[in-house]
Amino acid sequence: MTAKWDAYRAADLLATVAAELDRQGPPDRLLRRAAAGLANICAEELDQRTGGIYGRRVAMLVGTGNNGADALLAGVRLQRRGVHVDAILVGDTAYEPGIRALGRVIGVDNIEAADEAISRADLIVDGIIGESGVGPLRGRAAELVAAIPTLTPVIAVDLPSGVDPDTGEVNGPHVKADVTVTFSAAKGCVLMPPGAYAVGSLRMVDVGLPPVTGDPIACRLGDAEIAARWPVPQRTSHKYTRGVLGVVAGSDAYPGAAVLAVMGAVQSGVAGITRFVGPPAVTAQVLSAVPEAVPGIGRVQAWLLGSGVEDDDEQDHAIDTALASGLPCVVDAGALEALVAHRKAGNRTASADQVLLTPHAGEMARIMGWLGKEVPRAEVEARPRHYGVEIARAFEVTVLVKGATTLIARPDGLVASQAEAPPWLATAGAGDVLAGIAGALLAAGLDAFDAGEMAAFIHGRAAALAHQRRGGGPLTATAVADATPEAIGQLLEAR
Image (cartoon, rainbow, N blue to C red; front, side, top):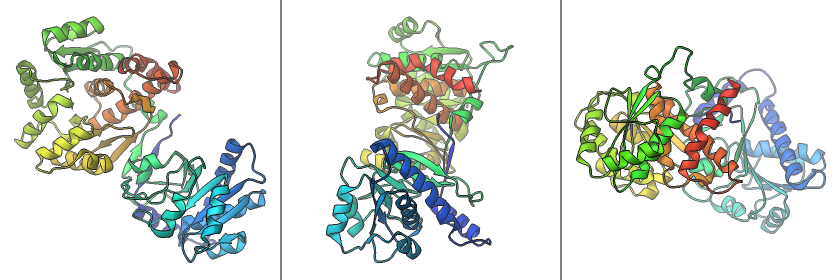
């Protein structure tokens, strides 16, 4: 099961820690609580990966800040349990009480001993960067990280060193962790790509901090929160009260996009009716694959626009009409340019919490071009949160940034993050299924931010289920759509 996470700015976490330390009590009490939890997780990883703890070797990469202090004190605890611990200093100084207690410390200039300790380690602990560290690793820190053998597991303290703590941006050498241990509250980078890809599995140690000063900058709903929000029909519900979704999708070139978008909407079981608008040949394929769909325009509560649409005057007119209606809309692929034109012209009758864009990185680069800013796709992939929020603000919309970790960005800067899917979900048509699920949730009355986050969650969970059904093998978008009802059913069991 996935747990709920909130992530904060590093400055807000520092302020919270400082306020807690101003209270009476030992000044190192937070360090010792953090070190105890970190040591336990290190021991668990050693036992799981090597079949034991006693006699195993751990190399601690120790910086000058509190993360280095946590590593040193965790090393002391591991040493008492029979682990051979080498603390490798990254700078000239480190947490002095930890150095004294540990005893076995390799200085920054002892390159040969450091390289040997790293090469022989069963586990590496990254305590290089402190809470306020920013920017890529340089100098000796970068050299030590480069020396880590590919197959040696790494546990990062608080965050992978070299990843920007607030944005998750990566601008040079950085640690790639198998596990990241954070304390009472997480920094934004652990939820936001590309830094999130360096986190590995995320573990929390409660050190007793009070609520963090400041609002979250990123969040991730877990099973319980998604289940509590998921629309479930009441005994008195009928197909019209559950919501009607209109879908303008597909073309003679891309009929499958229409089939998959409608399939995603119908298989989600959220909306009571899904209406389809498209060319006659595409309509025939949609009805053949999804006989529950209803052809033609009628009254709807929300629209899904643009999946696979290409050069069709009637569909273009339907898209323009939908965008001008003020109804909630999911805007995908072939409708993105029309949305930009409408919003630029001042047609913003639908608010940001009613309009959900679902672009991939290439489409986001094109949108930035329509804003007069030439941004290559690689730049968007390196800064997905930045550009997601910029587009959200420019057009007063909500933006779902598709990727291995999906982000949903609001104009106020809050970002939701979901990463339920296996890598096999990177396949043609998967985004059409996702758009269908999101559209159905909008039709059921959810706002764009919740609809985007919940659709991304269940889409990823359905992909994981389909992947499991296939013995861990490849996925198709159709298999993901087919697994969606079971994924929802499993989610709702707890509810």
